[in-house]
Length: 120
Image (cartoon, rainbow, N blue to C red; front, side, top):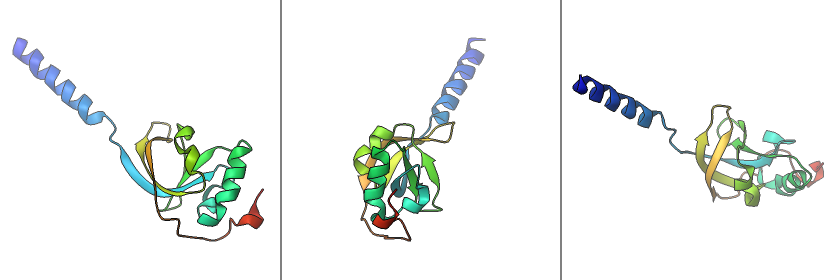
């Protein structure tokens, strides 16, 4: 009986360890919730900073697929609004990203639109 309980206990523990979310990394842009993917370029930095300063939330826009992802902890990217970055973190059950770390990437990709004339 003890042996069966031990095996069940080890199984439950191993499944718990496997279920823990592993941090992943994504490349993309820190934009604002108003402009979203249209702000995923180097020329949008001033606009993104202005919009975030006016109360819009920072969002992460992936390079691959231009997905707009809300941030669980937006303070983690406060110094990177408008920048091309690599974020490391984990997605939570609500679909938002918990950022563990941020690393700057080259600010290439002027992209389309989002210039200073598009500031809100």
